[in-house]
Length: 226
Image (tube, rainbow, N blue to C red; front, side, top):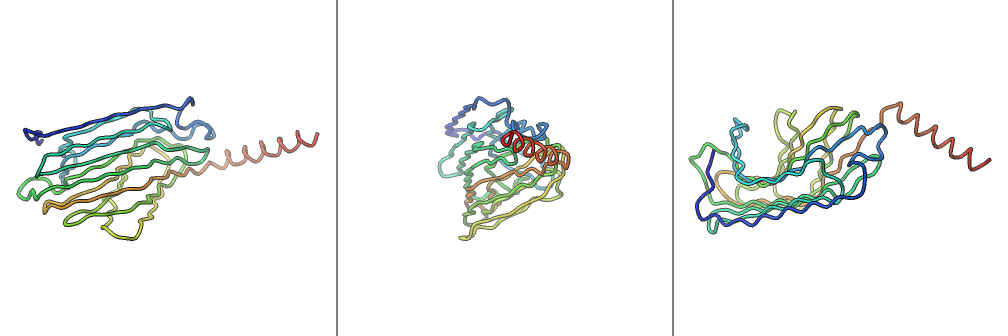
């Protein structure tokens, strides 16, 4: 594990504001989704052994709700810097949106056990229905900079190179427990990377829930006519 370099100047801000709702999953039939945690971090990644990666800086929020947000930033002058911001922006009966901005920059660090320096976020959730995750963002960077989106159940992350064209990318996932990670990466050759945009979760109600919705709508119409 890499120790934080001496002289590292760190500014950390953590802001958490909660709407007066029962949970982030309120309004979905039978509460099929629970966002259990959101997190932002920066550090070094070992591509071959992610468990040995070094998260030198990290902030975490359990049971987030719309309106909650995390911010993290730091700089080692002349060496590396990072910025991370993740906000739980909104939720509806069938979707939830998170907005973010992740930036990372570093000088070359060849010769280490790590392949990437990163600034990124993570969202943990449990869903009883199938759902999709859509990344809509701008990817900027130079040198060894790029961006990633990763479900921990996948064999490999989805990578995005810097481009003037916005990224719009969707992955479809089954019901269950998932950890979604995303952010900016810089390779050992050094450079900078920036990922700014939104992540939208769209949930697919089970057939029984759809039937209940139809019955509820029919009952409402009948009451209005009576």
